[in-house]
Length: 421
Length: 218
Ligand code: SF4
Ligand code: SF4
Image 1 (cartoon, each protein chain N blue to C red):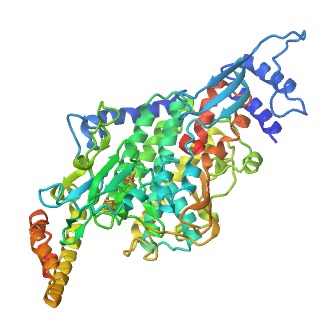
Image 2: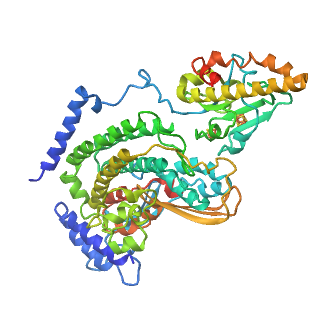
Image 3: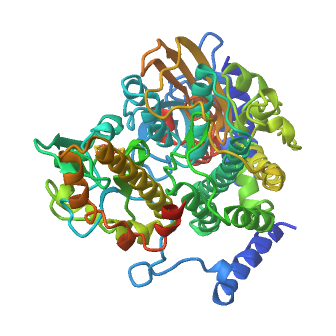
């Protein structure tokens, strides 16, 4: 599975750097020819040999992380290097494991809601929604009309802040120290302010409830939200002027970390990663969960599946999110905020199973629940997009230089709270 | 031409840099310890216990039903019921918590305790400068630390507190009417004996001055 893509990466990575490092060109092709025997999985741990058959270099094995500043949390990559090129990369997860699933199986359905905030801690609103959706399927509840709109609004705002921050982190990984990240955080702050005045907390919102939302919008909130949304395209234009044509960014991202369409599908990659590889799959369109069928928006698709496409997809998705937000903020009806049938305490869905999934900022976020009729779920399972998108990290990194590994990891968009659960 | 993209980006940076001297929208930082932003009305940090009147022990609304203790996800509330009873705001004798501890080093500010409390006894605070050098006891808040007057609640969450006050006042009116009807009907001794003593205790008009008259007339 991984053989052909990794060898193309080797070549593409080599040509991407050709202008500046022509000696590596010859090395990378000899590496490609010799260290990928047919019976072996994408890499070989044999050191390079020169023309005379003598070993000419040694492999270096290093652990990047768990406290590396660019690993976006506590995440380790055991990398084997031949010179500067990666011959093997093993992601090591689990430093942030906190037993989310088992805790949820031993507590009531409601009490898991605040824990879901802490999965992808940048996007608590979408986490809440995915969990609420699964429980609603299980219990046969239907969120009220107004709650559906609020969910779409908060989820799209979450997508905006997730993608904005991701781009900030990504260019930070490329070495743009601070400036773009601070601009991204300035915009994120506006959305966090909205979330704070709505739910009381900036990041750990704990806002959705089964059958609706916890509280109604405070007075004036919609106008504030409209103002933020109306100002966002201008920020995106500025952000793009700052980054999209920057030659350094182009050189560092184009042709780097190519993920082929086939591998992306086979490895069940979801979200912007998948769409950057050119696969038209967005759960908002596929499932039409909530009320997404009412909005007019398009799904941007990439062509090359490299880091630049993944960057661009996120910019374009933000523009589509703004469209959805504008429509939702215009149409939002008055009405009750929560299904009157929904009970806060003593909630016992009848025995059964349900899988609720949404298109979160990072990909398909799903919750799988089995109920045995007791107040606790019998089985509670999270399908975290970050973890599954991370599994092909090695395939994208083989043959690239160590400096590109950080950029590729940055473009995957992981949050370790979700990877490790 | 190579480099135009970088120059374009520099122009953008310059626009933001210069703009930060002239434009509020581009300078969004505030110098925190000197300059504090007023918290949003809905903002929440940790729970506190509401008491009516000025007596933090007698006016405590909590009846030690232990629902919040059971529902709190990380189980950071610890309650011991009292052996005796005290009258609540409607005059009904109720238990009260002999011990009510919240370990705010464990509390995750989810406010589920607030949502499930049927007596509007526990609410979310907005105080956030709570750091302490006492690692073990300092963040374990006891009943005395947690009890805060209703006036404080009104000052931090005005619109929410108004709703709560209206609801409680309506319930009180109902309970008084019922007690009166029972007293007139059976003339039993203990009930009217309790009702008058507790009437001044809740002192709703004092605390929710603007809010209480409205429900009283309805
Ligand atoms: S806010 Fe949440 S964690 Fe804290 S005491 Fe209340 S229920 Fe427990
Ligand atoms: S705070 Fe509320 S829920 Fe908790 S014990 Fe007191 S009355 Fe019961």
